[in-house]
Length: 127
Image (cartoon, rainbow, N blue to C red; front, side):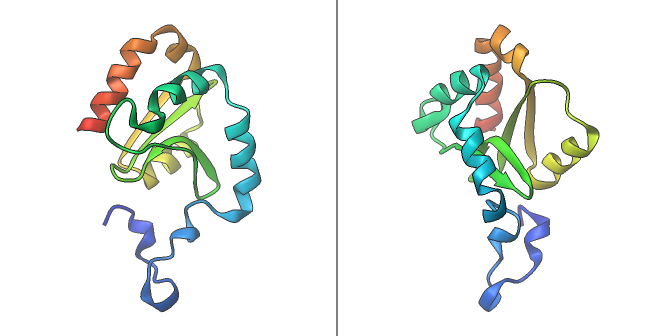
């Protein structure tokens, strides 16, 4: 099982996906983040959307618990977070809890080393 926290049974024995993913409680915040991207998010999304970089569908501002992951691939259980500054240890632990393949990149690093980091992202997705 990819997500150990989804072991709880939902309605009629199904897994309760909305218990952890895309909670309606945080929908407005995810929508705001999608509509107001940073420069780095905008550049990266132009490459990731529409399966341009790889054959996998990437979702933007995907809700995991109370967090919004900038870019997420459901099929590969892969997530990428662009950070303005370093994230707290608690935030890092929560990202790792929900995805085996977590990648955290500082925005200024992405803007400075865009091509090199795109290769790193592609390698993580293809693994």
